[in-house]
Image (cartoon, rainbow, N blue to C red; front, side, top):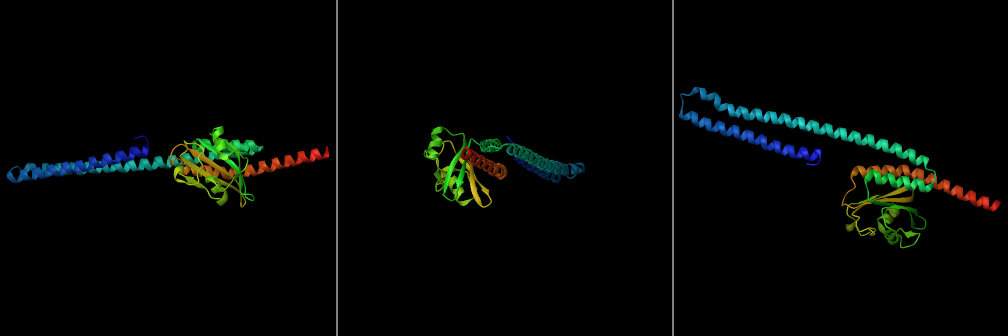
Length: 265
C-alpha cells in the first residue's frame, strides 16, 4: 500500500484472517482430542491436552487483539500528528502570504503573488483571475497562468470585457457563491479553455457586499481538489481581497495624481 491508511486497512484484514484461523485450529484440535478421550478412558493425562489447543487459540486471539488495539492507537496518533503538521504548515504559509501581500504595493504584484501561492498550495495546472463590474454585468481577465494564447483568446473571444452570463466563473460572479466542479464535462456552464482540464474550483472575492473579482483554478484530474486545498484557497482569497482593494485604491490615486499633474502642467 502507498499510504499509511491503506497499509492499516490491509493489516487489519490480514489480522482478522489470522485471528479466526487461530480460533478455528484450536477448536478443531480440541474436538478431535475429545473424541479420542472417549475411546481411551484410561489416559487421564490427555485431559490437559484437550484444552491446550483451545487455550492456545484464546491466547492467540488476545495477542492479536492487543496488537490490533496498538495499531489503532498508532493510527490515531499518526492522524493527530499529520493534522497538527498541516495546521502548522497552513499558519506558516498564511504568515508568509500576509507578509508578501502587504509588501506588494502594485496591483500586478498582488495578482502575481495571489495566483502563485494558490498554485503552490493546490498543485493546480492552471488558473485565472477576473475583475467583476456588477453594475454592467461584465468581467475582465487580468491574470492567468497555464494557458496558451489561443486558449486565452477563446476564453475572452478577443474582447477586453466578457459577459458574466456565461461560464462557471460568470456563475460565481452573478451569485457570489463558490463552486467546486469535480468533473467539468458534466457542468453545462463550463467553457472549454483546455482539453486537459477535468476539475475546477471557483471562488468569488468580495469587498463588503460587492463582488470585485473571481478566482479560478483548474486541474487535469477528476475530483482532484481536496477539502484541505479548497479551505486553503478560500483563506488565501480572504487575505488577497484586502491587498487587492488597497492596490486598486493606490492605483486609482496614482492615476488621479497623474491627471492632476497633467492639468496643472
